Length: 109
Image (cartoon, rainbow, N blue to C red; front, side):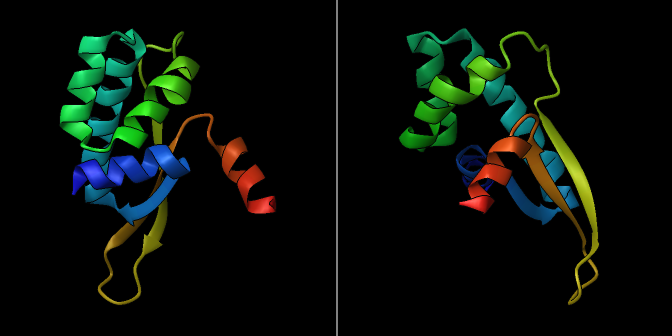
């Protein structure tokens, strides 16, 4: 489940989920971005083993990791959205830092 959530995060730049799931997905995504910053073949194979989505790994190494080359952590942010109507679960938005411009551009298209 975490691998699928992080694949969607890398593809879209932002996902909406519960707070507990977002906190776990954040740990998973931050580790993968740190792996992606190295950029060698061994790190790419590690990322494919963890993420199991070759397209997401390709995007991670080509687009996402180079954005954060100068940053030592804090690649994602969690924005709380309130409670879900059906079961009152705490909802939030998990997004990549710096991806809000890309998400806004995609919405206008």
